[in-house]
Image (cartoon, rainbow over the protein chains, first blue to last red):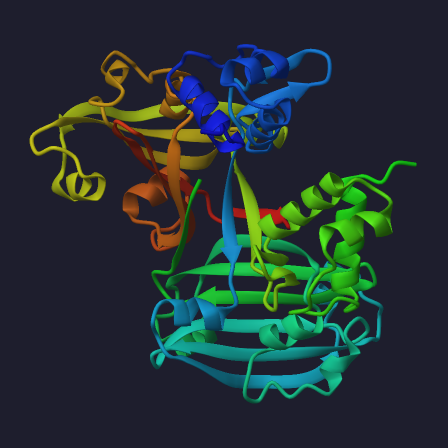
Length: 229
Length: 229
């Protein structure tokens, strides 16, 4: 049976977990490990690369590879499109538009996104529903200087996130998670009491040409996001 | 100059971002791409593998590789040790223990972690401070059946997370982020009003032998976590 990089990686992880290779210890070199596992050196190399990317080991060009004393663990979260998130739960998705207008850029947003003074921006506020129950409130600003097509988009029947994905399939993004207290408007839309603690995702995306969008997604009471790593 | 997998990846991303290769389109095969970029096929393969891992393209064994119509974007968050998180901000770290005892497993926790009826569990509650200001409240349960050493640990001068990292450098974990409202006890410890919306991280870790720990980390008012992807 062929030894794969996954076998090598799993075995090294076991040895680290069981303390055979304790934090700070030096791993054997790739040639020796390849001989031990009876596999190609490239196989060992790929296993080591993944362990390094996951923060388990630390590779230094001359000093070799060591088990990290405090592994830098990373959790990955999928960033879903809300329609798919709701449908994946077996619920019916519904969209509704609350507000859509072109306006002057407010000062806080101009500062935040380094926009040009006096430029226009498109502001869209909408709701996403799961089985008729409020699921997510979306408050989004879109920069027509980078995506001019937004001036012709209506957002009457589907949300700006889906429109943007079709228009700009790939962009750089910064995402934050936080807790906020519902103001009267959010409380009305999300059907909760003012002051309720709500989970919010804030995301900015941009192309080399400039910022595309800033969005605040506020989730209904009790929402949590979960992943394994 | 040698063409690296990063060059190939960046160029493919540019073409996807600019719509040269729109969502759903089929990418050239690896041999053709290697010829086009003047590099080894393994170089193209690595670039393609990363694009697939990042959810930008979709590889099917016989049908080739396509640009995803809705890229599955993933955000990665580093899971820091709180001492390092605070020190990285240039602040002084201080730890204080609130409570530490061995007790019967409460029913909710036994159900949650599939523990044995009648077993004991170690419960530790402590605070982490940044420059003398409350930073994070930690409420943690540790399973002595999987990490028996916990029965001899004191947690008087440093936190259970650091102890666990030294004892069990690597484990599987499930992590959730959510918003909660401060009860009177959390409000007292985190110096905020009862009802304040607070950001909470909940994490469970386990080894093949069983669950190690469940921890609830509640952050001071205004805390957010941010990453780029």
